[in-house]
Amino acid sequence: MAKTVSSADVIIVGAGASGLMCAIHTGRKGLKVLVLEKNKKPGMKILVSGGGRCNFTNLWADPREHYLSENPHFCFAAMSRYSPWDFVDMVDKHQIGYHEKTLGQQFCNDSSKQILAMLLDECAQTGVTIELNAEVTDIQPDDKGFSVRTQNQTFEAKKVVLASGGLSLPKIASALAFQTANKLDLSVVAPRAALVPLTWNTSDKALFEPLSGISLDVVASCLGVSFREGMLFTHRGLSGPAILQISSYWREGESVSINLLPDVDAESWLRETREQKPQSMVSSQLKTLLPNRLVEQMDGHWFEDIQIGNLSNTKLTHLAKQLNSWKFKPGGSEGYRTAEVTIGGIDTAELSSKTMECKRYPNLYVIGEAVDVTGWLGGYNFQWAWASAYSCALAL
Image (cartoon, rainbow, N blue to C red):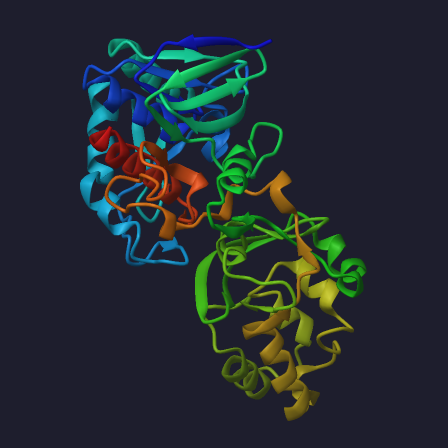
């Protein structure tokens, strides 16, 4: 039978980015904080983020532009309380070297281990207790506050913070937030994988699979949203920042429009080339703008490799459309296995935007990826984790 231990003012479930940040600021208030983590190490997603260098925030993070939610205004309050510069100040205090890669993205010069070590050091300074290999199986309100059950123990606390994350990277993730919401009848916005590679449909696979390894700068668009960044062909489909970004907006059955020549009006360029170099081959001219392997693979599919002077207006227009607005219809996505985040989560209508407290269950709080707030690729999700955790801690 599980042993009951009454050992904390606040129990935080999850030692990831939001859980550790909340623990730090709660501990600074003099409260006794216990963090329960299912994995054998804390901060597993922190360690693998940013290619091992942790894209820990984005200086451009704007709640009006860079976040998706059924209630796009929900994140405003927390984001206004804790800015990217607040986190940078902590990084500076710990003398961690970092740099801006692009578009406001801040990365460690050396390793994501430094960010995790910083958070754990701050936790230690405030007397926070972190218990590893402690997978929470149930959270229930009771007359003392809440009982939090693991396989071996049942903990009692007046206040509980659910910081267990979403469903992405299932080997280290937890479905606890969704399980708890179901048991407590909290509304949930249906989750799906986001910031994730998109896969070939059956008919495209044979044609495009040989292009694996090719990368180029593109504009990817879907449902009125566009991103200009890098795209990578893989054996399974398309990846790279532009595709990961647009995947958050893509829906099953929709196409993604990809501009392979974002700086070129393909139709005007083809017409000028046809006039100026009529004897040159279509493929040789395309290779001046696109990777050779891509042009060679599309020969016979997007164009007939003839002298460009013999290219009819109809065929020229068709090729131009393929170059400036290739309609890629994904077969699906790679799913939670490789997704960086989960879109959806506990409905923001259930929570206070100022404190992250459940409206129907006082003293139960939800922060980070477990909430229906999802940022763009590039440090935005870490900033939401820090900000939502900080706002929650202020209220504890």
